[in-house]
Amino acid sequence: MSRAVIYEKFGGPEVLDLRDVPEPHAGRGEVRVRVSAFGLNAMDALLASTPEVATRFGRTLPSGFGYDFAGVVDEVGDGVSAYAVGERVYGGALGRAAADFVVVQTPADALFRTPDGISDVVAGTIPVAGLTAAAALSAIGLHPGDTVLVGGAAGGVGVFAVQLAALAGATVIGTAAESTFGFLRELGAQPVSYGAGLADRVRALAPGGVTAATDLFGTETVEAALALGVAPERISTIAAGPNPPGGARATGGTDARPADLDTITEAIRAGRLTVPITTFGIEQIRDAVTVQAGRHVHGKIVITL
Image (cartoon, rainbow, N blue to C red):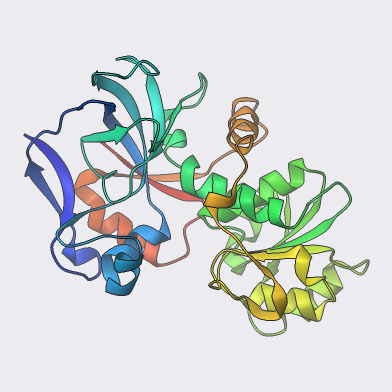
């Protein structure tokens, strides 16, 4: 037997159970990964709590939990030559990551080799948050000399977006609660409080103007950027649905470029990009999801096995 997080009804953290389940094995064209860490994302809890979202992503009850994972290949099925037992890997498996073992199909599922110098705990944060941040910045054509406004800058996607924008040569202004201002400054952003009057506060911080923006939480940053005169094609959002206000660009991790993973992992290895992480054991899955839902996490939450 092995363990997996399962839920049989939709709801909050209370519906998540760590259960003994039959141990899965790799079939033809598949590899099995012994999971050592998986990163939480806001979408994980949304899938578990909202039937409409679950249906949109093809999830039915009972369901497993989580997407991002990292670990070691420990079984290789017939017909697989790209991976070998013992290789460190990370990737995504919708509704299956929160488990001792994940079976993935190659090359259909997202699976990547973990570079030397990157721990499994860090690798388990990259697939959703890292690629979503890269796509959000790519959509607005960020370049050196830009001043970019990042909404939700202290969250899981935000910590990647802030640092990637700074590495691209942009001046970064990030919205957050005042309690996170010191944290954001360490990441290379000028912090600004979210809420009513955001555009005025940003104008005071950037008298030369803002040239681009990305909203990683909702629409407040989109609306502030429009009020500041940012062109709609230079505003992106990951959380406003397919038709954002004012013609801003909706985007997500699936829009990331193939080279973005290399950019992110090389920056991490070189120490130019850090991923602040809070860890929980898998037995604490409900506590971890509760903290994630509070929306005040500095960086990422990772579950270790």
